[in-house]
Amino acid sequence: MERMVGTVSRGVRAPIIRSGDDLASIVATSVLSAAKSENFELYDRDVVAVTEAVVARAQNNYATTDNIASDVRAKLGGETIGVIFPILSRNRFAICLRGIAKGAKKIVLMLSFPSDEVGNHLITIDQLDEKGVNPYSDVLDLKKYRELFGKNLHPFTGVDYVDYYSELIREEGAEVEVVFANDPRVILNYTKKVLTCDIHSRKRTKRILKAAGAETVLGLDDILTSSINGSGYNENYGLLGSNKATEDKVKLFPRDCTAFVKDVQARLFDATGKKIEVMVYGDGAFKDPVGKIWELADPVVSPGYTDGLSGTPNEVKLKYLADNNFAHLSGDELRSAIENYISTKGDDLVGSMESQGTTPRRITDLIGSLCDLTSGSGDKGTPIVLIQGYFDNYTSK
View 1 (tube, one colour):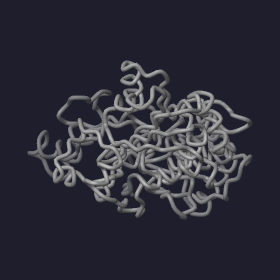
View 2 (cartoon, one colour):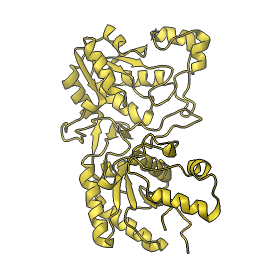
View 3 (tube, helix red, strand yellow):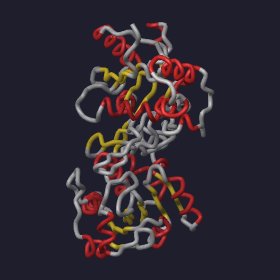
């Protein structure tokens, strides 16, 4: 019978992962057990994806606020530090901020407005319009901000992040001054030592600050790049991609992910004879249309993947072919013509009309987004995702 199913994404349950667990063995065993339990086969070019959270947990990749404070103090001097462009998140940044504040006498906290870089709004664009504030050029102190906009609660968390972050800093014994601006050079009016906390725009921010005469410019990716007093670390991303573990500890983005995915791939090949692709995934690369929040708070969607997941899709648009190239055909003739076109398509369709409207993002970003939506961020208990048929097309039998 002709195959009638395309891509299938399955969340795979696994034991609760603890520090020191042999995660590669657990992942391979869980996938094989799921296939046996649900009576499905595994194939070449299936994809097994593992959430970064359990990889980091198995690695015991954690750090305390004291570890963060020690590194911040050593690298930024321990006096007045400009902390600029953090995202507004209790999970992603609040505990990092506690550690940063412990490592300084004063924090000048400079917040971007109307929103942070991933779309968490302090105020709305309509509020800016109403008050005649230009976010590209205007600089507000806390008094002016309150006069214009009062208190604004995050629509999902109900938190006034201006108050929340300020209080966190004071609780750690540091003085705080809050500034609202979008030009990174503004912070140099307060201090020449700057920790920029943006994620995807951090390289540009660092470049601008260095050119403007900053004495020390670091990003979150420069903090905890090596172990501090036995802590976890990430040599590539530092504190970027970290999450709250407890009130004084963060789980860092996982390390050595390429070695891990190759290990899982080898175990699955030994068990099945199939070359299954493997990746580690974090946040998906998508934007919520209601809350306007861009999900990607990690530095990358996938910090490690096997070679078969490199590159971007090379696809044609079926509806374009049906409405243009083969508009004169129907039924079996149309199907045959489209199948033949797909079978003989070139290796590089960039710029061709037949590929317009396809999604030329990296395969790992696309699959990682699918995995993030499949596993969710709550209590599904499926830190492993098995995707089958992703690389099939209309001609696959």
